[in-house]
Length: 439
Image 1 (cartoon, rainbow, N blue to C red):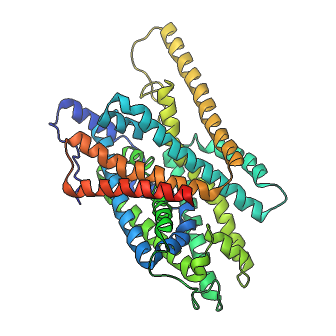
Image 2 (cartoon, rainbow, N blue to C red; image 1 turned 120 degrees about the vertical axis):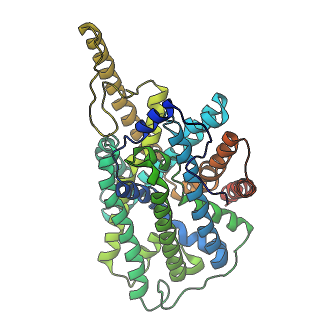
Image 3 (cartoon, rainbow, N blue to C red; image 1 turned 90 degrees about the horizontal axis):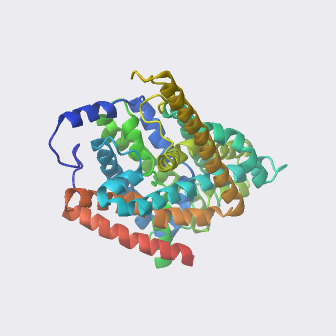
């Protein structure tokens, strides 16, 4: 595998590039804050289907796939981040596609990018509503989704430096779910649902169709590339992005391996689409802990929603001309800058009116996008179908095929290892998508 250097694109330094580098270093998030945000993006609802993926791929295939996907997606995330840091004008995944493939590709790249993140946001709303309905069935899942707008809409206006604290809460919820799964498996001595008496499992794949579905289920857990590169620009020291993202993917891969293996041992080939469903349906567990775990599944989507939708909102705001830039407006961290140019009073008033209008339209755009995600979740409440689409088609396109293709287009060529990875990614994407729809 090619080593990703700090200079993914080779060019001579210039005065402009030095100035650009200063702009890049203008972020406010520390290494730890960025790590929390990255782990929060990677971890979440994807881990609930890891045991099912193991049941489809078997112990051997599942272990190989989950480790390989962790390494490949970590590598491709660095590619995207380095391209973004090389050019200060790049703000979104769509900008990367525009730089690599030209203006004609911008619409397709933007569409894929927005489609994936919108699907993720819908899944988050679905998971939140279904989990809360189980705890308090007084209201329907759809009613809880509508109530969630009270939290979701304000969260999309929070800066990244504040969202990192919400990320800590989301990560804590994730670890709580893992601990409850492990505790349930250890505390129960009889099958099913016990780690002491494992259920029937397989070492090899269940079938070619099931293996294709496993491709998507495993890849869905690492599908954060539409968001992760933007975190590099927000770091106080972007040169530390590689070390930060290495830690984030290592933690995510280990956790996915643990939850997948534990759930597969506990419920075997009969495991459900979401391992949480098996915990709730199996007798002999601590009821309080299981309810606590479900509450975690309520909190987790709420803490991830703003981070997930942020790049899509930025893309829409750029297309609609709602960005302030770096003057006379609030930056991404809530601070305000002052225009020092000697403008006339009338010109200043006109400028302020324009910024006020942009602020109002930004509020409308972000609120409307959030409401749309909730509406689609109500109309299409099937969790497993959305997960299959996310992993098999969207995640492979944005996490493997897109980054490697962009690197090849910008550098003029791809190395042997990158070419092999790209070919494998295309085959798995096609195979997984067909298998997901067939299933």
